[in-house]
Image 1 (cartoon, rainbow, N blue to C red):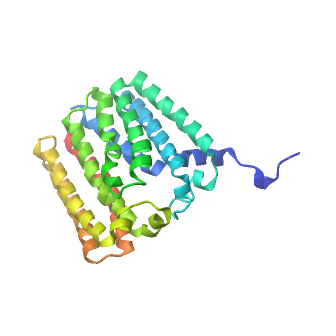
Image 2: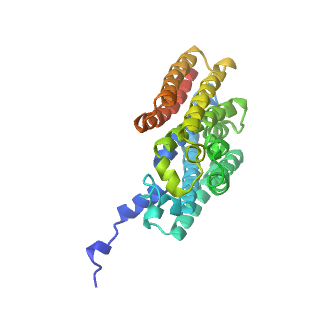
Image 3: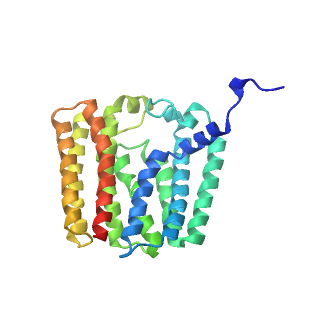
Length: 296
């Protein structure tokens, strides 16, 4: 007997649900930063085959981490307008399926990195997986309003992973790139939390606007952005980059500061959303400027 059409789930639909489980929009920016780290790690062009293989391995482990995050937070996601359509929150994928999927792609990522890149990159990427999927998701996010600050280290690791993939080292320059992302993370996520504050109240997560109010959050965003602009001058200060990068960093940072200062002065959800969107453009453009400067 043929199943009713309403009960038939197409293969493309199932594949899309698993794809969404890896949070592809978030993963794209992380992978972009890791690839920039690969190109900055050597004076000339790195081996393109190594870049492709390393990118694949890092992406697989990143996708596994996001799948575990979605698994753990599925009940929270179901309470938030921004996340209630995610596959686990909707019941499109079962927890067991998500766990199995994460194990498969995570294991594949570790194998790719260990056998075709180097063990250092595998262990650093695995540590990032644990930091995000376990330390941040389980311990920090539900328990402290500083979750974004403390947990930001795992999200800041992509350029270090990329650097290690090409050179089998993780020098100070790589960690400086991670520091930039680390300082960028709080104003980026708190801008989102400002205009999604009702979502976070409903979820029970102790985000800063919920626990300390929007005014203090806006001030924190502005102060962190000042620190971010200062941090982005360090590649020039240590002669890792030149004047073209410095000019781009100051111009991009000036626009970011203008957004966050406006948040302090005259708040609106529209402005908070614009600040969040610009923060993504800002980080991508900043790392692109590093790459262009590297080859000038």
